[in-house]
Image 1: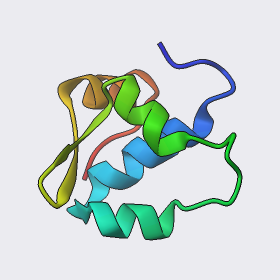
Image 2 (image 1 turned 30 degrees about the horizontal axis):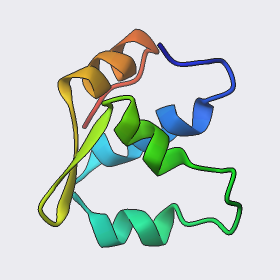
Image 3 (image 1 turned 120 degrees about the horizontal axis):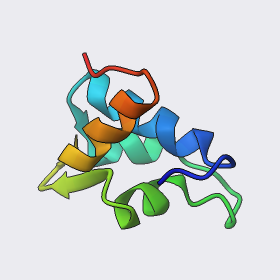
Length: 74
């Protein structure tokens, strides 16, 4: 379950779901210099997104997350 303080995880999952994304694109777009902001790692750990070779995809659990928050994949 998504905690109230994790809206960035929801945003990241929605962003990945909208279009094909490479891991490099994700790292470039979602990079941060804050070591406490671990959006990518948290999304992977919670099973919402997965890396498949060079691409990042939304998992079934990630699609369920989007649906439960009224967001849709493209």
